[in-house]
Length: 281
Image (cartoon, rainbow, N blue to C red):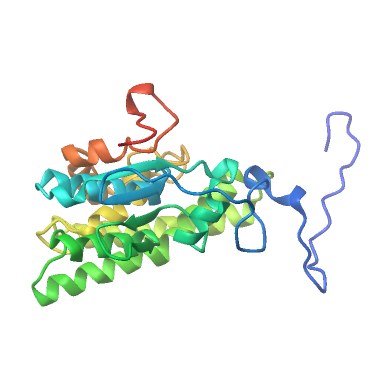
């Protein structure tokens, strides 16, 4: 009932049309950049710096995976891991430039160009970039068979699971133009199930693959670590993240690493000014 006591009519259920058509008005916060076709929208070359590795990214969870990895490699003394980090403003469509599409035809950040090879090697998809760098520098990827396989298990778990957290829960809870009970409940349930998977696993292990910090930890932390730290979608209370103490212990240990503190600031343009390093050269 409304305030004037007149009956209200519930919205009619949505019936999918026989043929779907694109309607920009239904795109929510990212309507200006989301579209059902691939390829560049404009011609623009990417900038290139002096370091061997050129990163084109933004400080989202997927972007932070790579900057943390690079900073961890530098922390170990790998001079070849020095990099230029160029800001890609996804809200302004930088990822649809011809130069970016040449590096990543999927038009998603992060994208990496390794200019130490001839010809330069393009690497896209955050998990692929982590694996490429781990193999290139021989770091953060266990060599023992069981631990190496477990690292791959959890790296690919993250790549397959996080879309339910980000594009699912995050979209409908934080970004969708209207809030609806069904999708929020559906993806909140799945996000909590995933957190429980991690919590049970970490109850008996220091790191995701056992006792060795690896690219699996680096991949999972910016999504699930940030969630239990209350830094993602302002949804910590909503999802009762206090119920996952082992994930919180693990996230705290990662967040205290010097390289992680540096990496999560790179390509960041929001929040406290002290936490923003829009580009690194």
